[in-house]
Image (cartoon, rainbow, N blue to C red; front, side, top):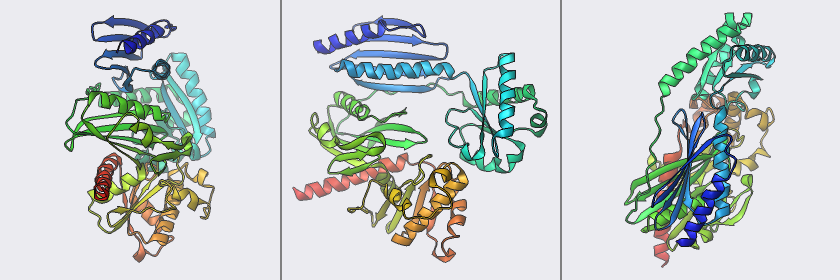
Length: 474
């Protein structure tokens, strides 16, 4: 404990000695906590060191819209590790300087006419002191450039695509540039209209700061930690179950995937829940004998189960995310024969697939952690390069239809659910599949708008199955 306090004091002193030109730093201390507050005009950050039975560090950032944009907690036992996490937090805090600038993306067929309009808009907004930034792209590049944008505006000649774009981009302002404004390059009129739209959006949101629940000690607790790659970011979420009820639930969104983040969650939950007896990790990648290979982030044959068992005597399970989504979908929808789940995060041309037959996941030597469709790409004919097709909703429908047709042809699966933000509804996909399959043979195709609950349900069900097999073996 004394060594932990020494590390904590060294960590705090290191933070205090850093260059604070970009934020104000204040410290408060009592017998149980050290609190460092960091303030910028656009966000508030805090580092809290809790001296409990063990020393816990808590890092968080709340922006001026009262949104939690960063949150981590971990046992403070390694100074270098703590410094790395603080630097990650500090980088996120300083990035909030740009949050006040409204970023607007114009789009037309080839991007030429809207590029000139964007140049005019930037000149006028700078001249009158409005915090707006304008860029332009052709339609085929639209969906890969929306991540940090606040509004998407289509040129009048693109208005026929407006409804489809609005159905896919649901978390931003999406509208057509009024023809009189566009034809006359009326930049002040466009800025006034955008300000009205942004004001309406701010009033509708009024996002209150979410209270972070503290981890509560449980009696016979089960921890499920999940990682899902969604829309260019890694969502690290976990639930602590106590007697099959959710005691705590938290989600962290990060641009990077690091196993150390998962281990930090586990270490902290173990410390505050001495009755924790089962841990389940659900992640992208191929899993074999407790080892994870996830080449996209440089993880190769990582023995996660053995690593967790170094400090934990309970049961540890490691599952693929698409498998658990598929299993949870089958269980929750009472599909007793066969079904598949086609999971397509934006920016992934092939997607991942899981198959359940008679309540059991379909495994085999060819199981590649849901990535079988990557291999199918090599033997499938596409009208364009798959990387080009993935950029537009129409291209995503084309890709999905061909993959689903192949899946159905090879396996005979009769029920296929899918998740894809780039495909607005199942009807468009079904119509495309009809181009390849006779209508009387079509499988049932269903669009799902969320996967997290299915993932948790599948993980709990699979753990129960595996424990039953283990008990039979013993």
